[in-house]
Image (cartoon, rainbow, N blue to C red; front, side):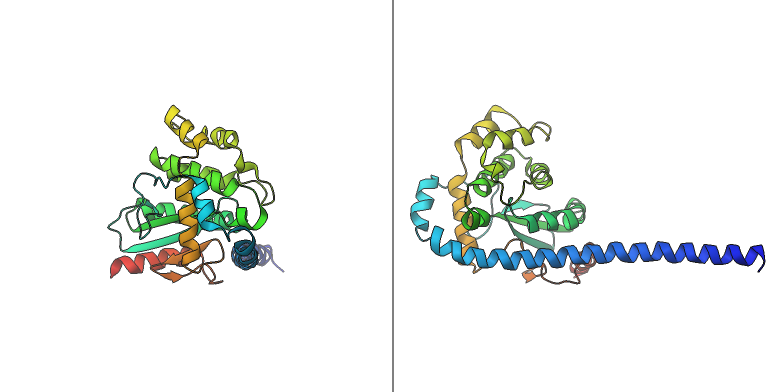
Length: 258
């Protein structure tokens, strides 16, 4: 065999190897989302038990959480949605999430960059609803305390950046580290200009705890059981195992053509 032919076969093998690596990466992303969807189902069952055991006194718990003080700019039927992006965008993504939920972190890692790019381009608006599913299912207050801190960041105009920080530094699901306001304030230091006396007071005083409780009640009233619940223009897309950031981008672009 000539040197030229050997070189041609070697190049073909290298191209094939590169293509196989791309396929492996795509399959890994797909499996991550499938596993995430499975976690949602498990958490949904835990939530059913938690609702009976921990949320039977829902009204009393809401009162204990304090008055309902919505963060700046909150929208939606119950005033529980934190909006991100141009409100005139034709495509709407609705996300119900819990900062202690590992499947929510998986969604943020896989789709977050694409979602941010589309919101910044004015093609997509996102409505974030913060819930306390893990607190109810596993005990603790980290879901609520982190949600309150995120609402405080919304008051400061820093919600998106702090949202990323909370998921990037998420503790193990069984670790209620986010119940510590000091931990949340330390993480806020990663967002330029967020830690101010007003923000610190908001976090330490639990200013939005009542609003967080109201948001979780809205989650239950909608009949939702798992996080994340992700709706695109009203259609649940999270449990679609074929969904990828690229497919989601095409859906948004198509919606903006209409």
